[in-house]
Length: 229
Ligand SMILES: Nc1ncnc2c1ncn2[C@@H]1O[C@H](COP(=O)(O)OP(=O)(O)OP(=O)(O)O)[C@@H](O)[C@H]1O
Image (cartoon, rainbow, N blue to C red; front, side):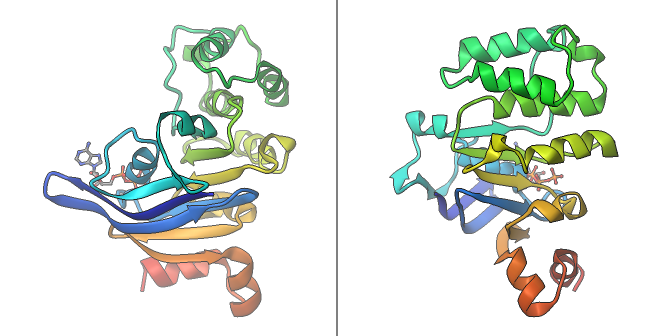
């Protein structure tokens, strides 16, 4: 379990995240949601150590997160970060060279799962295929947790369907998944748990099934209550 406790992040004097606490558990898909600019990406970057936090702790299975433990997490950013002159095969080779936990067999399986050709050049990919390659590169790292930033932004419905299939496949079995998005409609059916951010704070943290069963509400209804009171 990844545990985030009392995390605080400021840019200059501006407080972006305040007293953030929640957990990311194995075998669960958790959604971190909130309107644009509420701090979702900043929070993921703080968890990954890509930007320093001002306060609070991040632990994995009780241990403070540090260099080696980062191997347990794969961060899938909102777009491909590989040089555009590469082919898909070269980007995979790059990852294999750079990351000891790269899983070649899994990468090859994902390549055919997404019906991608290894010789395709990244600069010529459609947005949907680019998102699939981004997914392929992140998911092919053998990790215990996958953190994904806006995995479906700007892609068409068919590419989205292909990527959604990953979430019900063996590729994420037993893993802890965190999806940051403000497009709740695109991921609602996948989610076990929802953490809602507003003005840099966690305002709700609940299981989807609980609100459906106990309150007879859809997640979008809860979002309306929180974000359009
Ligand atoms: N490097 C930075 N320096 C100063 N302010 C920043 C920096 N990065 C982000 N911010 C500010 O922090 C706030 C949170 O940004 P962040 O990108 O984390 O939000 P988000 O919830 O991911 O937004 P979106 O849904 O639009 O991607 C914004 O007001 C943004 O302007």
